[in-house]
Amino acid sequence: MNKSVLYITRSIAMSIFMAMLFSCQTRIDRVRQMEGREIVPKMEERDMNLIYTDSGRVAAQLRSPKMLDFTDQNFPYREFPEGIQVDFYDKKDGKVNTVEANYAIQYEQTQLVDLQGDVKIVTSDSTILTAKQLYWDQDSAWLFTDLEYTIQMNNGTINNGLGFDARQDFDNFISRSNTGVHQIEDKKQ
Image 1 (cartoon, rainbow, N blue to C red):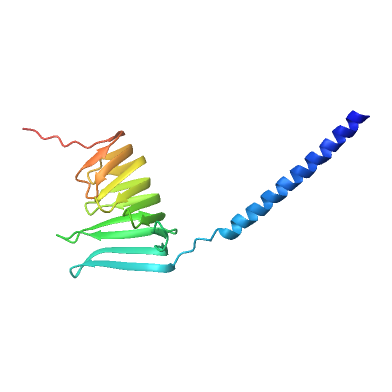
Image 2 (cartoon, rainbow, N blue to C red):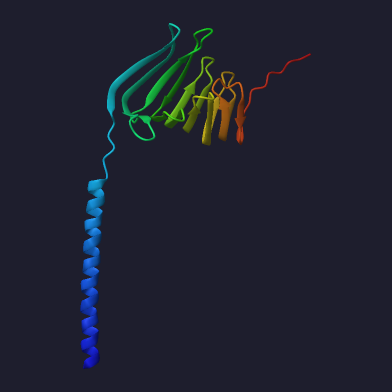
């Protein structure tokens, strides 16, 4: 009988200890929630139509249904949760290149833009590049992705690939792996 009393006593003590432990954890979770501050944008812009000029000429036009400005954070950024469309105007001839995405985020310190969801670039010569995600390094004027992409040239050439790096004017395009249908002009000499 002594053993069963000892067993019951240990069981009760263990139950009380476990209840106290879970009770303390719940209080700690509540304190953590009260300490954590909610991250809210310092500004929200609706139906945005922003025109960038350089020396009196239009350099770019950015349109977005919604922009959230978090530039007051430790790592400042701007978020475009409902998509973005940007037209870039060439300095020399005014030709337009257009970039569209369902979502975008621009990091101020690194000047990196992360474009996501149905990313589409249409160049002035009708070249069309589509991807699920694309990064644009504004400082080095460089585009890259590690995901699948498709590029259709204005001559009908289609290239499907996995990952690429390119200058933003596409004069240096490095594909990591690709397949496609290429149009080759037959020149008779």
